[in-house]
Image (cartoon, rainbow over the protein chains, first blue to last red):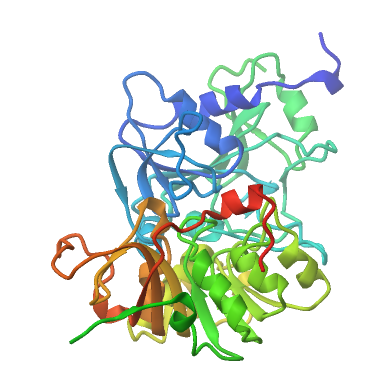
Length: 224
Length: 236
């Protein structure tokens, strides 16, 4: 048995792969910058997702081959991407009409903090010298049908990111539906965070010890 | 005869003056009208309010305009970039004002301004610091925040192709804010790589109809911001 300090759970790729399992065939999906971008590598066999990038493309494909990229074909993270057959370009007002108008099924975002009522903080640490930069996150959480968060369970300093209340400036209130961390898959319910699944080798108590609020145990195969 | 073509970049921006509000197209480098921005730097107006999603990269284009001290205020959604410290340095030392706007709200404010809509309600930013000081209103059981339309004296944008009527098409994700900005500015200036005869554009494919464009300037081989940054170019 490993000591509590050594529990790492899923890798970033494994977390991304786990999220992809929960995306239904035919979904229109917006992936945030960072770990969420990895999800595109793990589309389960037999399913087709259409990726939306808020700078004006539906049908976004993977990064181009070396030397094949175009400076004017990029994603929201300003990295070069490709357009798949069936793709469409559009301007920003149409793009955010898709977002705010409830036409996008799912967005997957990173997080600084998530509260047990679904509040999300992911754009600013709020210190006076921080350069505030919000991008499209506030529009996404306000308008997309389901909002998933993918994040390490704790900060690099070991502080919990899942809390009673966020201390950083909010991106939106009561907007997160589910959280995928390296340690667990956790639903946001009216009663608070509910653990649906533990990562391999992780115990419920390990997750609770690294969370800043009480967790409910919603595992269907829970034995304790 | 209508002919919106102008013969030089300097002529295209010649009446932008101190204190003007200027919308600049582009999302990152995609759609950034670098040659027009450089002409604006050469011209020299100051105390500008600039509306763009970002604040530029390296020390070319928009970042160079900011670095030159010409911009009093930025209205944008994401003033951070991996390879530029121009905006952060000025912001931290209190030498540039920032109005931070959620990206979709920024797009809709520009669209509304251009469409004669003075304000609208959006769910984005409700319950966050960016809602502070704005009117809240409840519709059908949910809260929305009042946002104002945005207009500008000038829009500088980059298209792929245009004719003398000012009909414009764009290149891939370089379209982004430009069609909205073209609607919202008193004078819209578009730089295009391809200048074509009237009749050579498919009316079904026109993205920005010429009514929204006042000037077209032909820039056959526009620079890419990332190429200039990689080459270490600092403008001027």
